[in-house]
Amino acid sequence: MKRTLIHNATIVNEGESIQGSVVIENGRIAEVLIDWKPISAPCDETIDATGCYLLPGIIDDHVHFRDPGLTHKADILTESRAAAAGGVTSIMDMPNTNPLTTTLDALNAKLDLLNEKCIVNHSCYFGATNNNYNEFGKLDKHRVCGIKLFMGSSTGNMLVDKMNSLLNIFNGTDMLIAAHCEDQEVIKKNTAKYKEMFAGADDIPVQKHPSIRSTEACYNSTELAIRLAGIAGAKLHVLHISTAKELSLFSDAPLSEKLITAEACVPHLFFSSTDYKTLGSRIKCNPAIKVKSNREALRAAVNSGLIDVIATDHAPHLLSEKEGGALKAMSGMPMIQFSLVSMLELVDEGVFTLETIVNKMCHAPAEIYNIHQRGYIREGYQADLVLVRPDTPWEVTTDKILSKCGWSPLEGHTFNWKVEKTFANGHLIYTDNTVDDAYRGEELRFNIND
Image 1: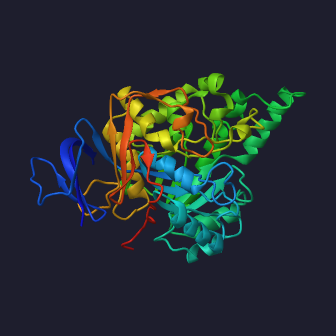
Image 2: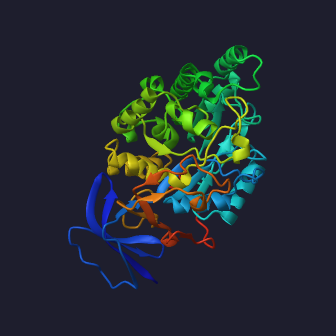
Image 3: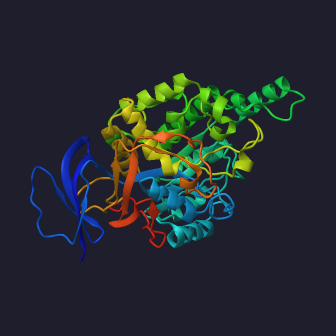
């Protein structure tokens, strides 16, 4: 069996950065060599990682790969290529595809499609509706990462807006419930207000998007979700927190003590409302990117432990679908290829430490979702690894974008960190700006000891 030595890297893992080497064998981490520990046997291949940092592969718990049914803008193969190039080795796909992943048949078809096409490791959510909570007990909690609940943002028929249905959902499963929280009634009221304000215009300026999908809309829905989860004793993960006010609802207790956890997404940590002036609807997403004070509060919450996970909400659209303002432009942006380097830029700026980024993008998702033997650099764990090099400036240009939609809000931006190599299950899926299109990742496994 081939043995590969990644030699002389700075290993960032479990709160430490330490010089060392890692041996990969049979898809797993066979040895972690630190403190001058000698290698147990010769290796067939040595990768000189001098000057590089070796991190666990990024686990992105929040992606929209648009497959099946929306493949004109993205598909599992193209987006998993972008993931591999960005150092992301595991993804969890959302259910708002066509058909919606809200039946057992659609779920099984989605899992088959992921196995057929996904270069990185994968799972997907089962989507909650007002009427399908009786199906939760039939789900294989070792294969399905969780239940996705849209509490406000209407997506197909997935808006759950009946209190009885919400109560049944929160009381009806011991699986993790991942919730998109925005109050639809507040959004409707705000939309009507701005339609009146811009009467005669065919759209509302995109700069008003954060006023339509307001702090009140976010807070009201998040507060309700947390209240219902608390009553039911449910495991709740609130997605893409975007406001300072919502942070008051969360705890900074150790992750192991939490049933209710919070996610921040790269766009809300990287951009602020001032960027609408230059990027316009390219950064339109739900919930909206808001004023800078919210961004600063989110960054502080990552450091304090109120925010547990950093993900992307990777949501590609064609540029033609992003035309317009607050009403007409579609919400969402492709971010997975540049999520890690974006956060490493914030490390250089002193916003986060490298250890914090690894905790929030690798360790915490593995712990919250109880993923089997991933998310850490530990002997015996799957060899999901990413090698990154600092002080290597490069510019995001159209030819470098691997997402099928072909654009990024980061075009023209220069990053100082570069993803050099990405390994999934010990297999080199990305190196020298090339993705191994022939490789297929593994299904993630959850709650394996239950």
